[in-house]
Every structure is written in C-alpha cells, then in structure tokens.
Image 1 (tube, rainbow, N blue to C red):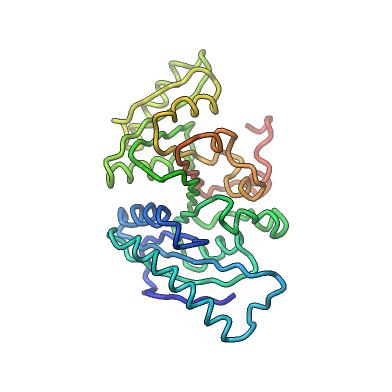
Image 2 (tube, rainbow, N blue to C red; image 1 turned 120 degrees about the horizontal axis):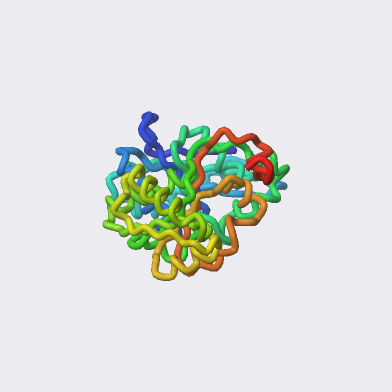
Length: 294
C-alpha cells in the first residue's frame, strides 16, 4: 500500500474520515462530512482509495506510482473545492491497494477517525467488498462511528428519523440535530409499535425526543406494527431518512449485499445508514441475535 498525504497536521481534533472512490462526483459526501466536522471544531480527512488488480504489484515502478499520485491529486483538488465553503479543515490521503472495503477500516484506524462517512452504490469499488475474503475478516469490530449514504440527490432539509432506541439511533439523532442546527432542517421522528402498545409507544417517543434534545420534532407513533411500511409512508414527503443499523450490524450486511431492508432500496429520497460500535460479539455482528436471546 502506498500513501501520499497532504495538509495533515497530526492533531487530535475530532476527525471525520471520508473514503472516496471518485472525488470528482462525491460532493455530497464532503458536504455532509464537513457539516458534521465543523459542528465539533473538527477536521475532514478525505481518503482516495485507488484499487488495482490483484495481479498488479503495488511496488511496480516509481513512475506508475507517481502517475497514480498525480491523477489522485487532481481528483482530490475537487474535494478541497467542495469543502471550501465549510468551517472545517480538509486533509487528503491517497491509498493504492488490492483491497477496497477492508481499506476503509484500516484507514479509520490509521488516522484515528471518530466518524467515517462513506457512500454506497454500484460505482464504488467497496460495493464488491464481500468478495475480498472471509466475512469474519471484513466485518470486524467497528473502529468508530459509521454513516453510509445512499445518495439520491442529497438534501437534508426534511429529515425522517425512525427510532426504537439504542446506540445506532443515538448516532442518528446526533446527526439530525447537527443538520438542523447547520441548515434549519425539520425533523420528524417515527416509532412503530403494535396497536396494543400505543400508549407506551407515545410515552417512549416523547421521552426519547426530549433526552436527545429534539423535543420540538414532529412525533409520529405508527401502530401498524409494520416498520418497513411505516417508514415508506412517512418518507413520502421527506428528503432524507436516517436509519439506525439495528442489532444485525450495518457493515456486515453491506458486505453480504443485504441492506437494512427492502424499503431502503425502494425509497425515492436519500438514505443515511448509521452504526455505532457496541460490545456485541463477532457472532452477533455477523448473524444477529437469535429470537430466544432478545
């Protein structure tokens, strides 16, 4: 692996790492990361991951590596342009590797990231991460908080945040609160229960909203018991849905090629998937909890 680092000061500030497959087209990731970093007086670290074929030696000649660095530098200049309007410094790194998905984890550890903001879609090399090796190697314990954006025209002006509690929803609330402060976004909270649990559900959502400093959000308790259907209905007038990863683990599901649910793929607006490290065992991260453990 070869790295070329620019503008790094080695500080211990709050650090948001953004893996980029193509800095020319990933303006929204930089915008989101810069907004979150600026809220904590932090720094954005854009990492351009250049994946090369397995049969290509990483040390094949200085001339080839210099050309990769030069091309990457041109692309990362776009990232700097995207970040220029935000009050957060931008650092950049180029990584040349045979891997892609695993490099995201390694980069987060190497650069001591507090948060990773990454995109997901067919145009990114880590979409094929599930082919890189054993799942238990790829889906290792998270080194920090993760946000994964399915970008369908990123617009944070109207946010839907479904919640059933837990650390992943806590992270989603922090993001929603920051976006509200930075952009004036509206926040709608959604909690799904069975009809028999309506009163408890309303009490939970009211208390949860107050505890997370979003008590002025619009609160909706859906009693259909159908989480996916409720999200689809409530998201019709929203521009961004922030979904917690739930107990099964976001990153391991991305490796498997199975996102949170079909509704994530069916929604017309952008979706931000959130996962926060917990003390879950590797088995729980890979396979979830069995019904008799819940």
